[in-house]
Each structure stands twice: as structure tokens, then as C-alpha cells.
Length: 268
Image (tube, rainbow, N blue to C red; front, side, top):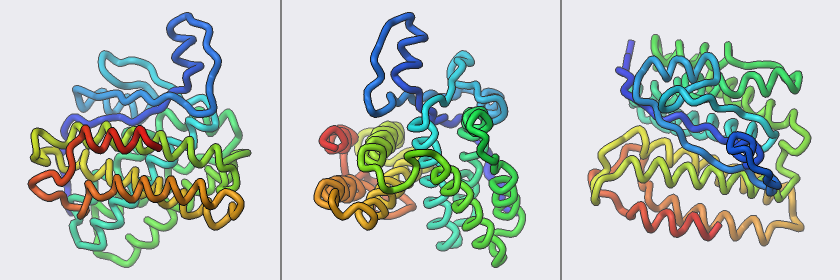
């Protein structure tokens, strides 16, 4: 069994601008893409609250997933975590993979579940839990790859169940990609100090979110030939950002500054 002690971790939860305006008592028109808010946990107990009840963050701020776009962004984050886990499992980095199969459960699912129930979409927590237990107890077994695929398919099925959750809406795909890239920049900024990579998990999270953004764009290019030029331009920008992540296990020295990565992200 490969157990990894859980340090304080980040919870990646996206709120729409409409929700932010409501919290501030302001009147605001929500633009096509949601606003991202990256909340950090200081204590492990807060992580548990975030995973189970959809609440968390510093001082226990309540967070919520409201719009379909919010749901798609969180699903994209889940897929990003699992893409990193898949890479690590393939390299037999089992203990390093375990946190990434746990993050969709501990950091994201609690806030997502009410949105699924309100839309009458089947929940998939049990599928995620089965994968985590498999990686904890017997990651080298052939069942691990099977359960990883099932988890990825379950997340994809939820996205497909949403009205604009497929790859045929250019605006939705690009909005999700921008949000994933923005969160990747935040994670990368937390991962490096000076020119050194000091937080491996945050580096890997950022890599996974950009990989998922690239996967979404590739799928959209194949299904939207009329928008291929626009989507391909986005692909090129994500590819350039991914140069900051040459390997899933980070180099000791960062190959790109956080400021440079953010500059590239703002061009999306």
C-alpha cells in the first residue's frame, strides 16, 4: 500500500461572476465565461469539509458551483488530475499518483454534487472512490487501468449530459480552456520559488489542467471544422504554455517563470 501524507492543499472551485456580484450585493451582467476563484486550505479538516459538503477555503468560506460552465470547468479539473495520475501510474510512480486520484474527491466533488442533483444527472462518487482505493491498495494490478478509464468516462458522461457540454460549441470550449489555463497559472505560481520548483503537486496540477485544455481543443477541432482555425490557434498557445512542464516529475529548476506563463495565458 502506498500512502501519501496529505499536507495543506488548494481547492480549485470556480464561481460565476453572477455569484460574485450577488455576494457583494452588486448588479452585474454575467459574461460568457465564469470567473475563477482559487481558494486555499490551511488545515486538513477544512479539506474534508470541502470534499464532503461543498464548503471550504480560508476561514471556511462557502463556495458553490452554479452554472453549466462552472460544472464543465470543475469536470475539466477532475480530468486534469486524472491525466497526471495516469502519467505517474504508467511510470510506476504510485505514491506520487495517489494524491491526484484523491483530489477530485477531496477538493472538487463536494461542491459539484449539488449541481449534479439539481440537473438530475447521476452522481459518480463511487466510481472515483473505487479508483482511489485501487491505487492505494494495489496500483500495479491490471484493474487500476480499468478503473482509471471508468472514472474518466464517468466524468466525460456528465459533461456530455449538459446542453453545451460536448465539443460542438466553440464558445463553451474556449471558455473552459481559458479557465483551466488561468488555474494552471495559479498552481504554477504556487509551485515555484525563484527559479526552483518547490511544490511538486502544484506543478503537476498545472500540467494536468493544461493537458486537459489541450485535449478539449483537439476534440473540438475534430468536431468543428468551420472553427478549426480559431481552435488551432488556441491549441498552439496551450502547447507553448506546456513547455513550462517538460516532464510530469518536475525539474529542480523551473524552465519558465510564473510571470512569463501568466503573460502567455492572458493571450488566450
